[in-house]
Image 1 (tube, rainbow, N blue to C red):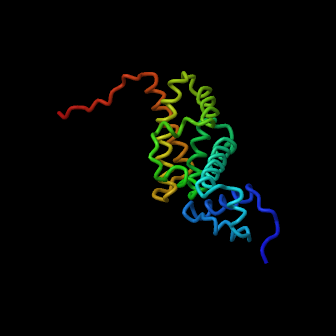
Image 2 (image 1 turned 30 degrees about the vertical axis):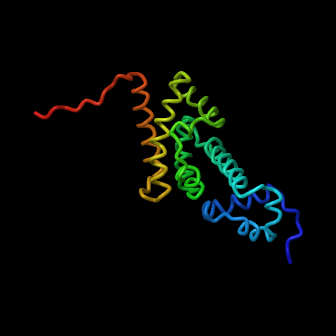
Image 3 (image 1 turned 45 degrees about the vertical axis):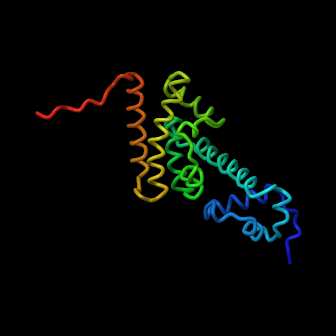
Length: 196
């Protein structure tokens, strides 16, 4: 007997999110969602025009979950910006399927596209407190820091390298310090020593 509960948009999105979290985006279909809701597919078509609209809304839900994870998992007394980097890498380990949906899909985005949304504004304020950089310099700094952090996160998401929490913390500290030195001395060049 079919479920007589009214199927809401939130129920559909929560179910799609749960499937994506466990199995990835390719496992999501209207039939699969309906089966998990013990329903027909009709309520899904009633709530969403098409699969693209459903996946767009799901993407927003995943994005919100990701930023909540970054900003709301406090890690003691360490600087907030470092906490965000550590949480980014932890997310890639704890939520592998969601991380792959967000950052390892064939999106063909520019690097700067990842740091131009409204949630970046919250991170921008944290960077300002940690660095005293100008708005223009914050964007450039964060992009460089994000690329480094993303590399570690991708290795973690794929279980290519198993980093300890201390290694992650140390690597992020080293990169932060190196980038701050570069900000203070932007003309610094990588000079190769000549062989003698």
